[in-house]
Length: 354
Ligand code: GDP
Ligand code: MG
Image (tube, rainbow, N blue to C red):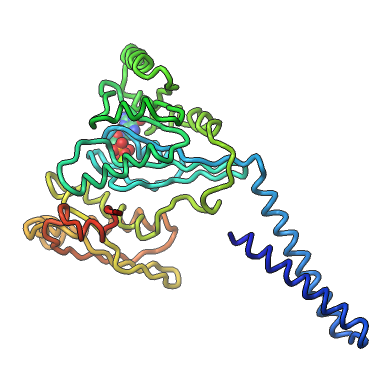
């Protein structure tokens, strides 16, 4: 868009300059000052044209771009694989199911392609409204995939939601199945899983790998890039995700809560960044942690505030690494009764679009 706009205004400038200089030439002599201004304008215009040409060159007609949409049961390593493919810690990862609640794009940019990896919540049959909306993100995956990437782990290859396997069979996009966590599998077990999958999904290409150890990830990446269609990029080529800095902060705080608290706490928590201010050499962030009940607030804060303090300092450390800046992080806990079943709050938190 920016390229198009500047190209138009560049052309307009050139035309009006040409007219003006024609008029000037026939009616009055040019002063030396005007000549040097015009010469400077010419230099600027040449520079602009060179930049535009460079931009056009960067996005060649052979440029490929597309969406690789990941799908799979909770906890099989979808987010770990997304991060390994993108080479950045975008999606949060914990040993708990349902860590990922949104659809998150991780973007891999090279001069001749842009691969958008779409990480999603794990497939499940929803129990409350939040999970309904999480599943909406999952179903969306079939609508815009250029490649469908199903992740399974040994011993649990059946998808945990009604109708999902039929959808995967019927989808138009090429289907790639990753058997993840092979570091934990015996060779014979792996062979059995691959045989079972190739029988169940004759159209699929199957790649065993270990996302955690980045084993087999480069090979998979090559295969995925090959399958992308010719297309100009969808996002700016400097972008590595569609999500905001605020979102990254919220997710990082949630990751620490998932890691440190048990039972219902991680699932009753939503994090909202209230302010995100860039100051010289410092990011000042103020975030609220919303829970569903007073008792959860007490547990989260912990004895003399120790629990909340640990979440804050671990999140801050990771975020300082991610943003490469010093961070001042302030956390507050607030009770938002029954938000997981509230249409109003789910909408405010960005889960509900319709
Ligand atoms: P998701 O719910 O499918 O997104 O799964 P995550 O990426 O959050 O990973 C769930 C758990 O599996 C985490 O504890 C990961 O460290 C672990 N994990 C992911 N990939 C591998 C792998 O290749 N090998 C092993 N051993 N663990 C893995
Ligand atoms: Mg995940």
